[in-house]
Image (cartoon, rainbow, N blue to C red):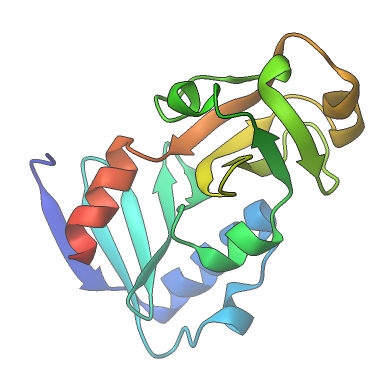
Amino acid sequence: MPTKQRRYPIKNKDIKQILEEAQHTLGLNLEELFDVRASVEVVESDVALIYIFSGKPVIYKINDRILPTLLFSEFITTAPKIVVDMGAVPYVCKGATVMAPGIVRVEGEFAAGSLVLVTDVKYGKALAVGESLMDANTVRQTKKGPAVKVLHYVGDKVWDYIKLISE
């Protein structure tokens, strides 16, 4: 549990900077998705800086890097996906790197270093956001080794904290 927390609305100049960073990282224009003038808050904690757009925790910043939360439905629906078999699910949900043998299919195109969504094959649920270690075609052809470095996953500190502040 975080030892400190502060929640407050952020200033317009700070909103603009965060929106530019998020657009560069995620490839999504958050201004088009949310009425940013209405309500953008930040929750500062020792876990991460969590940005709340219109009451919804959408992105967070940790170690000077902006990442989408697993509750950001627009990212989840548009991001390229790595679909893993059910045997990989418990490992991904503990933050393990996604290994090529556990990948059932790749949806969409991406370059090495791109953010991808990791989902399970049975239910299609979002399990993690990760950074691809190779491009989409290479992932499709590779049969061994690491494919995706997991950055945020169901059950990690950020996930638990977001659930706590959303209640």
